[in-house]
Amino acid sequence: MKVAKNPHGPAEIKRKKSQPAEARSLVASAPLAEVAIAGVPSEATVTRVRNEHQSIIDQTLRLLSSVPFGLMLLALLIVVCMIGMLIQQQELESFANYYAALTPAEKLVYGRLGFFNIYHTWCFNLSLLLLSLNIILASIDHFPKTWSFIRRKKLTASPPFTQAQRVHDVVELRGVGRGEMVDRVRQAVRALQFKVRVTEEETRTTVFAERGVWNRLGAYAIHTALLTIFLGGFLTAKYGHTGGMWLAPGQTRSQMTQQVYNVDAATNNFATREQSLQLPFEVKCLDIQQKLIDQSRFIDAMNTIDWLTRVEISDETGKHEALIHLNKPYDYRGYRLFQASFQAVGSARLVNLRVTPEAGGAPQNVALKLNDEATLADGTRIRYTEFNPDFQLGQDKQPVVASAGYNNPAAYLEVTRPNGDRREAWAFTESFIKTVAEAPVMKSALLNTPGWQFVLTNFEKASQAHMLSVQYDPGSAVVYLGFALLCLTLVWVFFTSHQRLWVVVEGEQVYLGGEANRNRLGFEDRVRKMAAFASQSAECGEL
Image (spheres, rainbow, N blue to C red):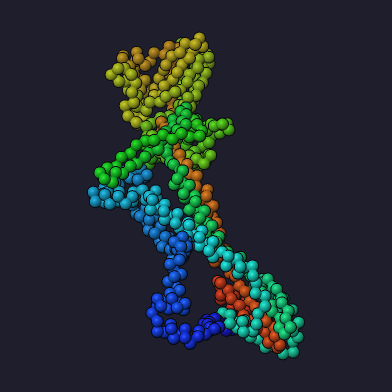
């Protein structure tokens, strides 16, 4: 097996016509201006005149479509992205503390250069635009040549041409007819998964074999994937926004609140303000729930496994229920709703009550969810509407929440008797009822519910409200598509190759030569098999 390192020698250029002797003498003796006047311009004069007539547009397009310019832009984008990772961006919640820890010089320099909001600066957007333009122009510039390379096949070859290829070999045959050898070669290359075309000439036969020709378009598929990713990033930066909404059971929201950050580089001041954004739908909270590690402890983050929010989304298409919890966001109309935080103030998702008639009789056990209603044996309806984790009476004898913990839990009830008379009542634990009964002021204010006694026997701990983060990202699907296309294209490009092989049968010799744009070792192995087959006159099934 022979591998040619430099198959193409330098071309020799010959003049078709020589200049007259007088002209040569004039060129040798006259200055540059006189030569031009004499009508015999030098090569330097022609080049200068051509450059002067080149339009600025052509020079600009040549620069924008050049590969070095594209690599420079790519390096610039990488540097900008590294700055965005090393310097905290202002849309993060922890940015206020980060900004306060910086020195005045860092605040001034980073603020003036836009490092706190690097992905929305004109430098980043311009670099992304120029890189996209470079990819498009470079693809347009090189595609005609690549397409011509794919469509136009060299179906005939000569022995010197095959030996000038990177991979080549010669096999000498004796006693084998030309037609029989061509048939064997055709079957052999087909067994190696090549597409074969045979061209008969007067003194020789050329078998052209090719495989993986579409690999030549791999670069354009990669370009398409990159442009798709850039487009998705642009849509997200231009039209995307992220906000949040607090939801408690029974509440309905149609707006989300977005924090707008502003860094004044001149004064080194950092300010935030809230901005409300209208949603194309309404979100009603139906229920919230907290899964705790230890039911006897408080509902802080260290004791919480997961928290769930059940919502009802309403728009012109109807109503749709969704369950949103920590590891399962909900996507609707391009908006993604997921859990962000919860209010660490004790509440109860479900309360268990023991209701005893004051006139005597068997007690009745009732379980109520927040904002739910139940009917007692005599037709009285009770509704659970509020929970106080640490009940206390204020100076104006109005209930207040003394703390966020479950110290003196109480459930607020709306009681409607069968005759329509409405009363308000608090359901306390048995231990707290004794405390209330011993205080005349509290007893007269709180235990005034004729007909029934309400005792809070148990309750399911939960937060008072959950914060849902709402993210609108119109470019996310486009970015995912671009990355999927990029991965598939890279696998296709690097695991396949375009291989071309010319087998010329002339006289008693077989000349093999070819090239591959990738995986040359595998291609050499295939040519070696072809040469061994031809020299041994083997059957094609033995390849």
